[in-house]
Amino acid sequence: MTRGKLWLGVGAIVIVLGALSIVGYAFAAQNKGSDAASDRHPVSTAQAVPVKVAPVVKTEVGTSLDLSGEVRARSTVMVLPKAGGRILNMSMDVGSRVQAGDLLAELETSAASVQVQQARAGLAAAEAKLAAVKDGGRAELVAQAQANLDIAKAKLATLEAGPRPETISQAAANLQIAEAKLDALKKGPTPEQIAVAETQVRLAKDQMYSVQTQADAVLGSRATAMGATVYTEDMKEAQSGAAYEQVKLAEAQLDLLKAPPTPEMLAQAEAGVELARQQLELAKKPFTDNDLAQARAGVQAAEQAVALAQNPASPNDLKALEATVDQARAALDLAKLQMDESKIVAPIDGVVVDRQLSEGSLAAPTTPILTLASTSLEIAVGVEEVKAGMIAVGQSVQITASAYPDAPFDGTVKSIAPSVDTRSRTVAVKIEPKDSDGKLKPGMFAQLSIKTQGRQAALVVPRNAVVGSGSQASVFVLSQDRIYKRSIKIGANRDQSIEVLSGVAEGDQVVVDGQSGLFDGQLVTVAGR
Image (cartoon, one colour):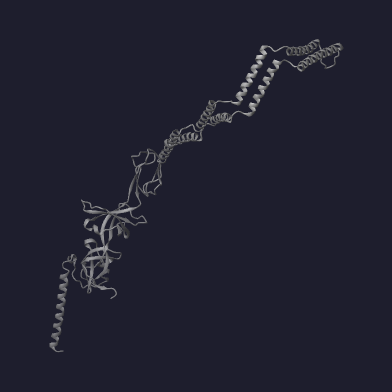
C-alpha cells in the first residue's frame, strides 16, 4: 500500500468519526429539555445489561377521563319505630346484612293487644246488630203480625164474598119455627096433643104405683144377704117421691096445654118471631159499605204491621248501622296496624352500620334505633364543566380501589346532574360499580377511568414499560445499544397498555423488562437479537 492511500484511509476514518460526533451532539441536544436529562449518568463502558423491548405503536383507542371519588352507599336509612315502647328483642347488630322486610326489633305489645281485642269485640257487636236488622224483626212479633193480617184478610174475604146460603137457610128455618110456635099458641092444643099429655099423666101414675108396690114387697120380706145392700124406709120414700114428682109434672103440662096462652107467652113468642126475622135479614145482608171499607183499611194496617215487624229499621237506620260497622272495622284495622308496628322491619336491603339503642331501651318515634346502608353502592364524582360534554349515561368505567390495586372493577355512568355547581363549576356524576363479591366498602377511595364516546389514533406503550406515575411517569427508549430515559405524559389506561400523549414517537423501542437499576445512557443488550 502506498503512503498516499494510507493517508486517504485515515482521513476517511476521521470524517466518519466526526460525522458520528455531530449526530451524537444533535441527539443529545434533542433530549436536553427533558426532565430526565438532569439525572443522566455519564456514558459507561461497563458490561451491557440484558433487557426486553417493545415498539411504541399508534392505534385507535377510546378516549377516557381520569377522576377520583369516594365509594358510598346509594342510600342510608335511619330506622325509627312508628310507635313508642320498650324494646324486647333486637336480632341484628352492626355488620348484619338484611333484606327488606326482615325483623330488626320488637317492642312490647301488651297495650296494643288489648286494643286489638277491644276493636274486634266492637266490630262483632256492630256486625251482629246490622245482621239482626237485615234478617228482620223478632220471629214471634212477625208471627203475631202475620196472624192479625190473616184474620183481617179472612174478614174482608167474608164481606166481599157476600151472605152465605147456608146461613140464610138456617135463619129462614129459625123464622119458620118461631112463627109456627106463635101460631100454635094462638090456635091452642090439638086433640092429639091433649091425648098425648093425658097419656103421659097416666104413665107417670102407673110408674109411681109400681115403685110403691115394689118397695113394700122388699120391706116386707126383710131379706138380706152377705154383701147385699139393705133397703130402708128412707130409700122407699125417696123413690116414691121422685115418681110422684113425675106425675105432678105430667099433670102440670096437661093443665098448661088445656089452659089458653097468657099475654106474656104470646108476647114472648111474637118477640121470638121478630128476632128470627131480623136474623134472616142480617143473614141476607150481613154488612154495610162502611163495614167493607173498614175491613179493607184493617187489611192495609195489618200489612204495614207485618212489614214493620219484618223490617223494623228504615233505610236511613240501615245506612247508619252499616257506617257503624265500617267504623268498627277501621278501628280494628288501626289497632292491628299499631300491633304490627311493634315489629320493626328493614325498609330496604342493606347492612346495619350503626345501632343506637339496645334491648330494654325505651324507643320513641323520634329516636332511631338502627341505621342501614343499602348494599347498592355508588361513586360520586365532580366532572369539570369543560369536560362535562364528554360524559354520557351508560359509559363504561374502570374503577381501581386502593385496597385492590391489581383487581380493577367495572362500572357504568348511572346519572348526570342536570345543572352545574356554581361554586366548584363541576357537574355531579354518579358511577354504579359492579361488585358482586361485595369487596368495595362505603368510604373507600377509588380511581376512575371513564371511557368516553370519542375514539382517536393514539400512541400506546405496554403498561409495564412505564416507570413512575402521574407527572413522574417515564420510559427507557432504546437507541442503538443504549437506553435513554424520557419523561412522558400519559393518557388513558387500557387493560395492558397506556396511552402516551407526549415524549415518544411511533416506532420507538421502549424497555418492558429489566428496567431495575437502569440509568440514562446505559449500555444494553436486547433479548432475542
